[in-house]
Length: 360
Image (cartoon, rainbow, N blue to C red; front, side, top):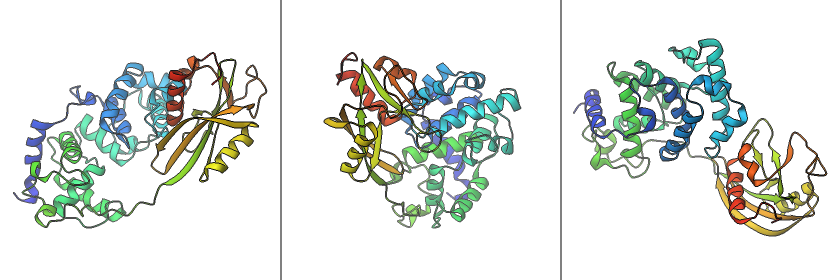
């Protein structure tokens, strides 16, 4: 098999082995479904996304429904997926589509790329899968598969490497089935041509693969070494008054923006994190009640929840008083606010182990 005619073999394999996924069920493909699923799939496992996609479409079945929803509802629906800027951008983009495109995603590369949170990959996915346009969706799977298939030894995370592989994809993508081509590349990368120890024996393209021929499947693709993740101690304080717990709303920008959390102080040193928590809440961290390790892409949090003795809210003196960034919620009310992912895990633990009417 020559390198320039492998696409037919790929599509024949895809016809027999394509993954059954909820966002692939509509025919013709729903542009909104493609958009939402591709945003959810960024940095998130497919199995995790399936349930979220179903629940999202139950709450926001159309772009109009999403645009009209309050942000807190959107963030609650996203809770647990992480990278909450994705949800905010979906929300902003839906509102923009309502104003500028009468609720229909535009069939135009530039117009799609101008929407919040939609980059070149998502543009390619929407245009090819929903509108049948001959545009590659260049994601990590496609970069990895084509780097091995053609023996590309440039860094696929660099500008030149991506440019080289994008050109190869543009030359290979068929005009008749561009969406299927992109999804086949995704499925092949997810199921067969995986990052480590690729399953070459089951690959439909093994006869064309230069990396396999040259014994380079374990060294290709070339990637720049990632910086090590920063590890931080996360001291969390549980302050309970009259069955209600103190929560803090994070800043509107940055990591986990506008999400709610239990009072928390981060520091590389666990003792300093605990001391900072005691200073913030003007109390003493007593019993250690809960521990959890939460991994983000840039950071790892080693979380510890402490029972606070005589802890106070930094900006109020009683549960009856309120401030924009600090408030008191009973466990029954936690579902009404978007909790940051790791703090949602703490909330779930509290619901299971603590009577909401009693102090921890």
